[in-house]
Length: 259
Image 1 (tube, rainbow, N blue to C red):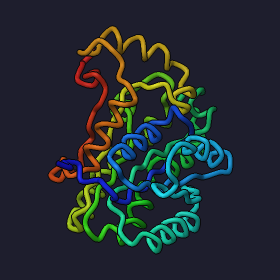
Image 2 (cartoon, rainbow, N blue to C red):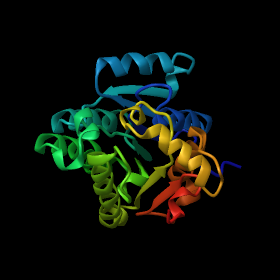
Image 3 (cartoon, rainbow, N blue to C red):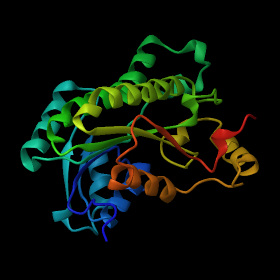
């Protein structure tokens, strides 16, 4: 019995940077569920890495489209070409976030206007634009998920402007869920625990965070990328058709603590 009901469904995945990316682990889980994946990439360097990751997969099970989330024209061209080729899209994985290194390393009060705007545009507004562009092709209903982090809710050392961008992202999830729910489109966020990704390397206190979670989280351990991927697939699947507008924590329970 196919309880996920993702077989042969078209799912767009944005944000695969390398083999450690949460988006890549989600993609592998989607392949296991026999979904068809449309990958987007921003720059040629990302395309090269993505192509290597996909070397062992049948190319009939995926396609690749260039998409710069900081450009309306690029995003429109990408989603239009995807829609024209595939007609119906059932899922979208938004795993895109970026901030300038100096805006993570400096004190938050020193955040530049350009750095703040760039982090918001890349990490938060891009979800709104993606939802706007994919909506016409989710004619059978659909599920949109994005990746958040506890820094959206609490002050975490070194997360700075990205924490504010993630807070905006989570608010976007709620407003989008309310707005496009009438189209039978669900929008949710996965707030993943600390995982060693390329983005995490930019947070100065990351190793301290890992150690603290191991000591304090209810499960007394850090999570695995596979656990985030598993929940992501659930949220894209028929198992979660009654859930929208939520921020779902996959963090070994750390977010429930008051310390």
